[in-house]
Image 1 (cartoon, rainbow, N blue to C red):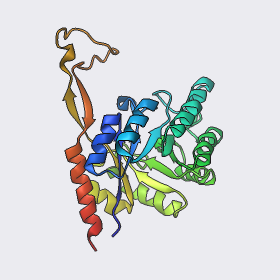
Image 2: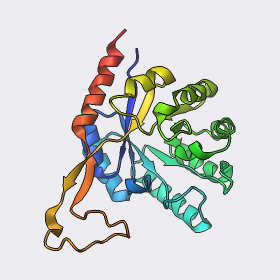
Image 3: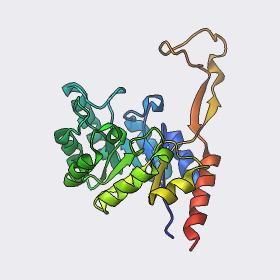
Image 4: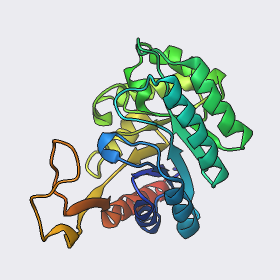
Length: 255
């Protein structure tokens, strides 16, 4: 049995370092995971690549809240994509839709072509989970030469959609990779793999870290109206990811 590939969703260069030490095969680098992941800085990519040398997919998403962008936002996405590729990104992760939720073929082609011309991978992210017809979307992505699709099977949690993931894999028939992600844990990972037949998984697991530099005035907030605590941030839980990676290695070695 071949080992299932483990991709870890990261929000910083330090996240990537933790995922690397834990034995992840590949990472997706973002910023602002609270909003589902936005384009990371070039600096975070450069540092992550320099310190780990591992395979890094970089998100290209100019803002939170949907996937139908203004002309200016799309222009920013194209510029960011070019800079990320020039600074060592192994692939671009993106998703473009029309207002009716159908796949935006023209914009998808622009980034897929950018990645392919640089000899890198093109990944269409979970925007596919809100399209009205995933088969039609897959047909277009296959035609455009997209490498892989990240999907929850159009459900809030992959564990609720293993049959759909299996149908996607069967429909793709090797023409495009299907990467299940969203809600995969140590508790459901084996079931998701067995029921879907997937060969790779995408997940995140963070732990809270504390930064006490703000403790002199706890009444101050720097963000919006949600007012999250200012004395903490998230970091990949290397111990948890390491246990998953070890389990996948053991599982892959079983006949």
